[in-house]
Amino acid sequence: MNQKPYLRQIDVDAMLKASNEYAQSRGWAVAIAVVDEGGHLLGFTRRDSCPPISSYIAQEKAKSSALGQRESKSYEDMINGGRHAYLSVPVLSGMLEGGVNIVKNGFTIGAIGVSGVKPAMDAEIARAGIAALP
Picture 1 (cartoon, rainbow, N blue to C red):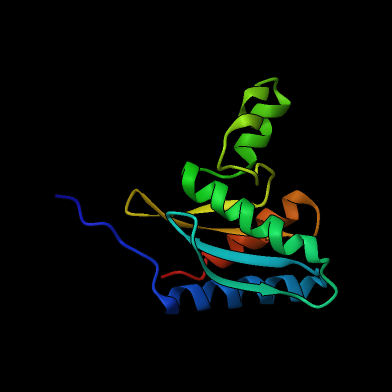
Picture 2: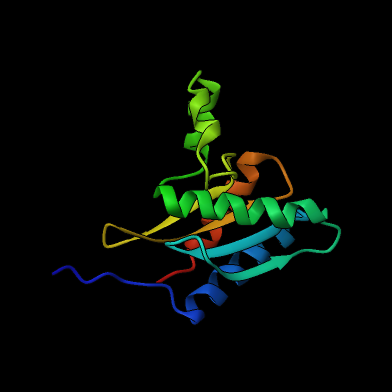
């Protein structure tokens, strides 16, 4: 039987701290959400001056990335490429760039979703958080 790693609270705290510091160093007002592999919220922060809607979007990007075991950008790319049927998927509403799944030992164990700046910047912040994991 496979043994699967999982996110501990210390991991979540480290990722939120790293993501937040990365955003702060660039002056970006964003919301950052960390979820487990089922899309359940484990940690969250919303930086000063970040629009309230970004709180919701960040969580949905993270959830879409975790459940799909891929970056949320892949859904955006498929939809923009003409696969509009993805818009009807019932549990995925954050199909925009900025959700990055966390992979350890070949398993998606969660995701970080970021919202508030340009999509590529959101994903950049998420990756900075994931880089804080051992």
